Image (cartoon, rainbow, N blue to C red):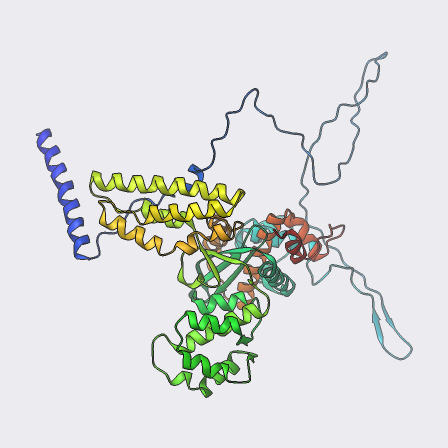
Length: 511
């Protein structure tokens, strides 16, 4: 009986595999893939093997507090005749959390001519909640990923008289300075960085689904939440707050690349006006030229608008020589575009195999890609024209090979079509080979979304995006977020933190 059950189980497995193969050959949609999505491990596996540690394990170093250390002498009763041998230090760190309320008695005078003179409040006082409380609230909510109800409960438990509405206002009202600084950080990064890595994730705002786009690199991070993740939206974000549309050489080159008919490009170039202040002026210009009446593919209005947006990006000196690195999402394919190798290899890694021959072919191709990836990492450290030529030929041999697995061959052919973007590192060695940085950056946004859901007001949305991006930027620049908030909110005795865009510009070193 046991043998019979075993044979039945084996036959059911064979039938299931045959059904899946029939569905695949017919081009139908098969069962959902419920296998756990695991990273391929390509980046870690191509790291050089670390030598095993020899000798004793390194112990923890001395504790160095970031605050001033207060000395306090502890006395002891000793017998007569004992000799004093100095002190034995014992460092204790503590945290004081207490509510404090101050009533400022402001002098009020009346001048001989009848005007009232009122003494100003101390620096940093803006409203009925002090800068230390505001700093703590922003720190706990945005970097500590706390929820508003939990934060409210904590504040009330330590003696702060505050309502839920007042706490919400501390998080989102009068934060224009943070939003402006985040915009300046984005502009500094787009102007000076040799590359930017981009990604997006789902977001919810005003009861509707939207998308949050991340733009950043090793020096800065910026988030922008919008209702769309189209290329029009991405190009609009790359303008970093500017609203103009510009027709220049970059715009016309973009239009030609995306198959806008030559007569339409000529009609745009023949007009004397090349700069348009806002979308209304730009769409009115297209309407006068008859673009809106055309019903063809590709849409002339969309392609022309994308071109004018790209012209605006270039006119403001953004991404002039920089590379845009992405995971192959179509909306990010602008300018000098590079692709993530980890996402490319993952396609091979997740390919379904049904026979031992298929699995052997997949394993061999993955091994070749991993070896090639390791050599690309070595090339980034020591680039040269001779090595670049050899790597390009080797790329062709890997991705133009023929195996006994037809699906794998088609996938390799598709990846070979992206040769220029996958091998951008050969021309721009500073470009990373993966988008791990973007995925790490956007994780804090995903956590905030899971903890608190979406936002309701535009002010709340912009404030959340700005402060999350500024906190990430502080971490990358080695600036403590606590010190940064203290400097911006003018807490008494705060550290002086310069505008973050200055640090971003200072981090860039030309090759």
